Amino acid sequence: MQPINLAAKLAEVSEPYSPRIVAELNGQRVLVVKLLGEFVWHHHEHEDELFLVLSGELELEFRDRSVTLGPGECLVVPRGVEHRPVAKEEVHVVLFEPASTLNTGNVVCERTVATPPRV
Image (cartoon, rainbow, N blue to C red; front, side, top):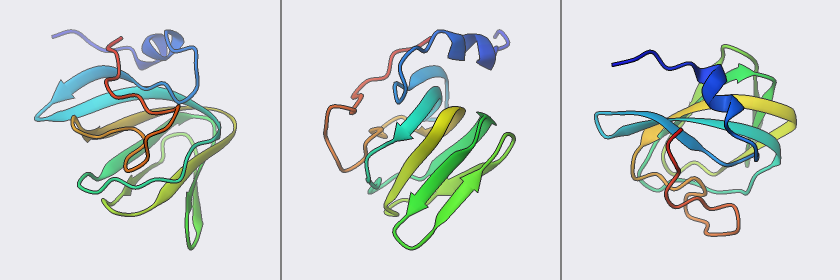
């Protein structure tokens, strides 16, 4: 058991939308990711997903509205809800989700990361 320095782990991430595992617990992954630009519209059939913003401003778009998160704010996207993260400037985020979660959910594309590496 060692402390995890999230800023140091994020410093190892160079590409946006390239999640990295920093810890696992009870079948859940804790990931860090940098976001920039628009991601793909997607949903997770069986998994809820928690977004916790460390720095920057993240817009989570839903088909009927959008929610903006700032540093220290989080939001749980319930399973089955279609969403798209959008970051006008680089945003640093921690994700909490089941280990089975595919970052692009029901969509497989060039941004799909089947097995995120550990940092």
